[in-house]
Image (cartoon, rainbow, N blue to C red; front, side, top):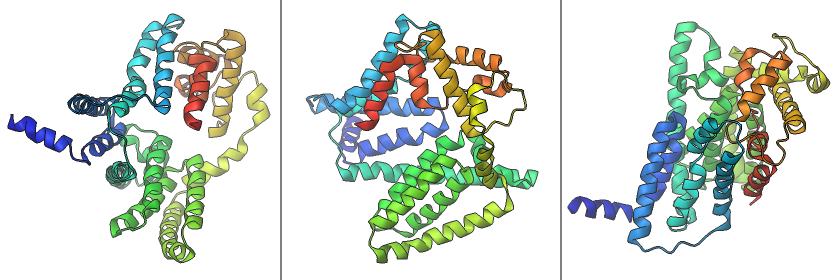
Length: 355
């Protein structure tokens, strides 16, 4: 009984659920199994809290939207072209339903609790960043190639995508910049995350980073801004030294100039060594989606959750693209949900975004 009493005491502390939510977020980078276990623990304690406190569930429109998306995913079972893949997809996306239900059971978070989640999440990502750089340093000693510090190579130890990781780091950086009182660890973390974002070299994320820094500069008073601009100067100086050692980061920007839009939209066949860029491969995926809508009649219903991959591969074979692209998804969440859940899936996603 003492154990249950102690757990109940911990559960009632204001920082308990922020810590659990931060745990779920912080395990997303290390695999599906750890994050699922963390989500299971959060679900258990949320249900326990709701029952023990006799909480009355009040429906909230913003939480019903992701649940509606998941219900639509379930409905695709009736017309899917591959029921096995759709069932697998439902297992992988069940958090769309579980997470909103958890928040319906929990007390509404105030700003302090929200900041607490971000604080724990930021520290976890700081640890990830140090881990990535440590592994890259070891690889650099072995290979003598600076490439290991950049783009996908930097996060390859956990088989991650550079853009995906960049989003997490950008959220942490934005949170740190928003803090009124910054300690030495915060200052170090700001510089550290800026360097990491440039090394990861996602063009869109770096563009957003520029906007974040400008907004941050305009939001704070001039004195405060010029005081903190020193941090940015240090970060940019260190990063420029790093970039000067390797041309890979810079080349990521200049290679986009080679994109031939007309060719991507109308060329009937490509060869295996076609010079693809980030922009061109995404344009091709959108061209494929347009053809799928016209030829496969997926506008209203889609192929079914997780089932667009076979048709994508077939069309890539037809275009004679490099075989590595045959397993790619659309690299565009709007296109992905449109192709698999139809126009209603796209509208629900847009509604969630705007709400």
